[in-house]
Amino acid sequence: MKLAHLADLHLGFRQYDRQTARGGNQREADVAEAFRRAVDDLLAQRPDLILFAGDVFHSVRPTNPAILFLFRELQRVRVALPETPIVLIAGNHDTPRSVETGTILKLYEALGVEVVTDQARRIPVPRFDCSVLAVPHQALTGAERPALRPDPGVALNVLVVHGVLEDIIDPEWSAADYGGARLTRADLGAAQWDYVALGGYHVCHEVAANAWYPGSLEYVNPRAWVQLREEAQRKVPGKGYLLVDLPGAHTTFRQLPLARKHVDLPRIQGAGLSAKQLDAEIARRVAGAKPPIDDQVVRLVVHDVTRGTARDLDHAAIRHYKSRALNFQLDLRRPEEHRTVGVGGPGRRHTLPETLREFLNRRPLDAALDRDAFVRLGVEYLEQVGREATGEAG
Image (cartoon, rainbow, N blue to C red; front, side, top):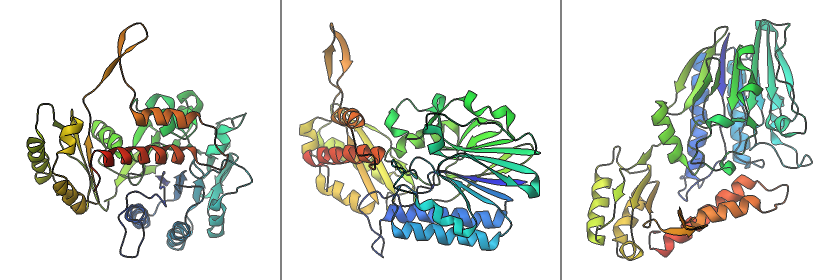
């Protein structure tokens, strides 16, 4: 049996102000295009079972275009692969905080998709003597978690679950950056399954020989640069999904081309540089970008820049870089300040974004409000104000 494992589509994700010719958000269109390309590849590979391991949408209340787009793409799969079961579980982004809110995911049952949104459920695949235990986000957040045990009466057992293993969380990310339920390796018990299909972590990651995160299909988090670094460290070629041959769990990563690249330019040490010297260094980094910055998502980090130097930079040139790229982030970082902590030990002063993130994570919110999105938006607004104050915004 050939199984396709996808996760973290985040359809409806929006970022930056650039619009398409039809007036939509360009990054939302990029995310949709990534899934369209995944469907094209699925139809070419013709798997026997397709699993979507949560966070199909970026929001509990996705836009009408995102809802319709997913319907059309799943319909393409259903028409081309009528005998292939499709199992879709809800992730934390798909799960309303109030049970009265309901979920749009049930709509796709009209296409014959097995949709699991609240309680864990076993889904038989008789054609291959297989059983799929589908465990959505909500099933892991209740007072009593379901027992993750295989069905002894079948030849093949597959677990699909949306949650984040505690021991793989990147230390640069705060707890709020991972909205999914926490899991341990003991929870999974990977050895007892033929395959464990995980969702909730955006970088392709091998948990065990038969247990994987496929990663997201696009960069759908403001901290994409952390993902890029991890992909480089783990030698992950990019974004895509997994094809798995069972029994044996032989896994193949199907890399998909993206609409544009995230380009992290070589960093600049700004200590001791005048504004004109720094302008020249920035220009050199931009000129040497591969690919060129045009229509890409670009970041350039410059360390140890004083407020006066930042104010005197050539902001007309910076605005020109911004007009060329889909997004050009000139990340000017102040010289690090130290203060006395406790009885005199040196410690790093919390930045305003860090202070705000900690405050918003503690603040009581309405049950229907997406805390992750609320915190992320608040920090983005604060950082934008900071850039405008130093003349970086254009």
